[in-house]
View (tube, helix red, strand yellow):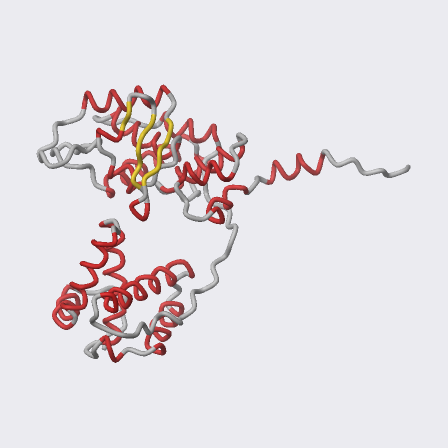
Length: 313
């Protein structure tokens, strides 16, 4: 069996044909549990990659060593702790679904331990003045739309998927936006007047959606809900313009999610407490929010400079 990680179209067909009923049950389970479409796609891709390693055996014949072998091979390929844990989470969910659907009785992934991820890693982010410079680099035919997207991520902490899912009715004249986050959980984000005004401009200028079944806030030039990929493209394109304007930033690795990191970091630095930030970011655990308590070397030096050391000459 070939050992390359990427599934070719031919392999996808083989996997689908062999495990069609199990994959169908898995998708049904994810839909009924409220998983987002992006999570469903990611989980199915992870499970397909795993099923390739056991093909053509039945899923009921899989044992714990089979899953450990798959995770170990991922590690040998240089796949990081977080990505391996995501793969394990998908496999666990797959077997849980089959048990819930009375298709299987045992979950061989249940006792496979997660990899220990490095905690309190310093996230990549933009300083306040850098974020402001980044926003100034926004341009394009749909300027207000693009500007609003970047500001919702950088100044309200929204994820790409959350921006993608926004509908017009989620914006309230009273000054807040209802955000549908991970796990199908809603949260309320108060908006500053300037951002609320910008959102109203976007609503006035947007192209009328082709479909009458939904009312997306951000619409493409073709009248469809703006895709996640396009939102990421807008952010990444603006990062490239920022690097051209500020050459010393050329080697820093940025992505759309770094705007959310910037929001979290700058909130902490401006005095927002962890519990409040947890609510704003929609984190399930406050441990996730704690990554934003990092400080810069400059702050460390300033802090140590305030220490009085009683040395006699």
